[in-house]
Image (cartoon, rainbow, N blue to C red; front, side, top):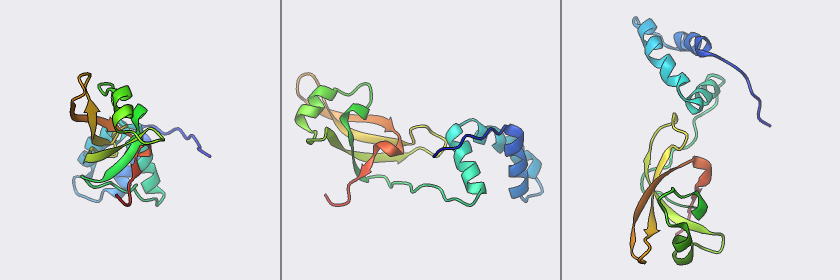
Length: 139
């Protein structure tokens, strides 16, 4: 069950001022408050950290994963990718290129095989959410 709680930037600033123990703490709070508040994902992780939770695992660059073809980017030729690369569940293998940070809605840049209209294949790159990826344990 998800619970919705409303906080504002003053709440974030108060918490930051409690955890930053530096002679220049006030300036750090001014700098970091808009950064944390600028992303609902960052804010969610911040408050979870404050209650003792851990950040999610970061998948290393080069990790092989599977994901639904329909979740690939707009520039992907989904029908040809399904025909050439997808398994029976319409999943394709992708490679993690980069973790872009907990502040991003789609924190991972991934690479996949995009099939062009002429049948040739080129690398496609798109951004995906963590919940769209299934790590391949054994390949």
